[in-house]
Image (cartoon, rainbow, N blue to C red; front, side, top):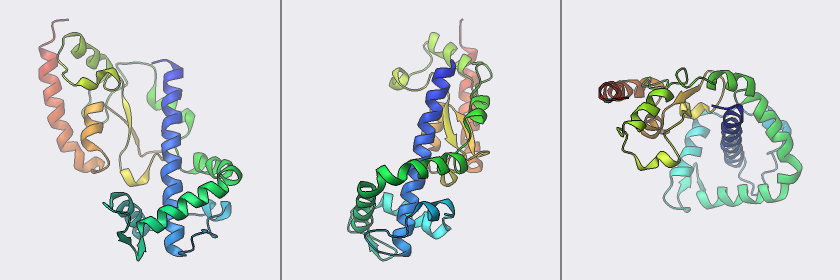
Length: 214
């Protein structure tokens, strides 16, 4: 994989990491002080922000809520959403650069470390969970032994997963992951919970690879 593709992947996870953290931060600050203007959501408070388990849970519930009128810790989802949208509208241009700089430094794997993780060798770039590498994925494609309709956009290259979904893309929590494991693991399972499932995938790949003619 060329440097440019790995670099693009890194920019994508950097963006996702920041957006998730910012939403968690703003949600937590609203719950701490239900003021629609979010006066405590400052650069200084972002630099020392450590979410509690309760706040992480509330943030997840707000995303999973089927209606905007449902309550999270006594506040309607609509109220939280409106406060976050208003804060972004008023402060994005002024504050986001400083927020991003701190988030990229403290809450996301560094670019050099990511480049080392991703590497350039398709045989070494393998799924952390089931073990299949990109070279073997190519063999399965050439032998028409993969059946997903997503190959135009996903599957040919390793993706990036957070071992523990709630921790985000911090160092030691980032792993390369094939499309199939990433799709199945989603944000539902931890590394330990998903490993037995991945072993089943590993056996399927072993069988299909034994059927390859080229």
